[in-house]
Image 1 (cartoon, rainbow, N blue to C red):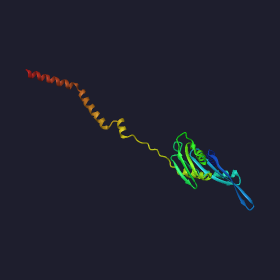
Image 2 (image 1 turned 45 degrees about the vertical axis):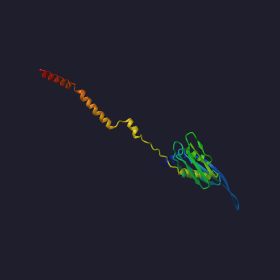
Image 3 (image 1 turned 60 degrees about the horizontal axis):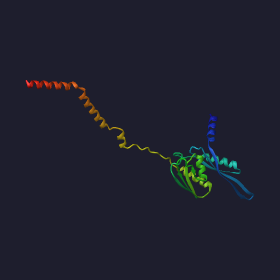
Image 4 (image 1 turned 90 degrees about the vertical axis):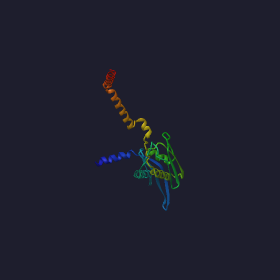
Amino acid sequence: MVNDNINNKNVSENKLDERVLYLRRVSKKTTGGSHVSFSALVAVGDGKGRVGIGIGRGLEVPPAIQKAITQAKKRMILIPFFNDTLPHEIKLKYKSSILLIKPAPPGTGLKVGGVVRSVLDIAGLNNASGKIIGTRNQITNAYAVMNALKKLKPRIVVVKKESSKELDKHTESPSEIQLDKVENKGNSKKTSNPKNSDSKNIKTELKAKKNSK
């Protein structure tokens, strides 16, 4: 049982797409010389609406990327899609960056630059448009995108019912149905007894003959 659970976790983790968004070299002057380290910004997504970002630091590039991946997996969020795009427009200010993202019709693609495009692409979003105003810092813009995606609300579609006039056209009212039944009953009574009408005619002829005598 334990081995099965481990295998399932590995399969789910292998399905996630990992992308390095930004990598920088950081040097710090110390008494013994300069201390060099690396920091990596990584985005992780499954292409079905789940995405997360993380930052990792290390003395070498691979450990920094691995730390960023583990942090991104812990901070994944779910984006509510609507027709393969965003449910609504959102504008957000995060520190020195101002972000605007809008939904787009099918076939538009991702008309967004920088880190925003990579985050939306790895999440599985195919149609969106937007703009980043303010800073060009990739880390700040990445956190701005994540904060904007967290504030998205799912779009609810309300199906309108047909109006009463349209329903009257397609269906008969119960009063009309009752009138039709009554008329049909009356016609059936009149036509169902032809003998009664003949007997009445004969009686009137006999009475006329007696009176004439």
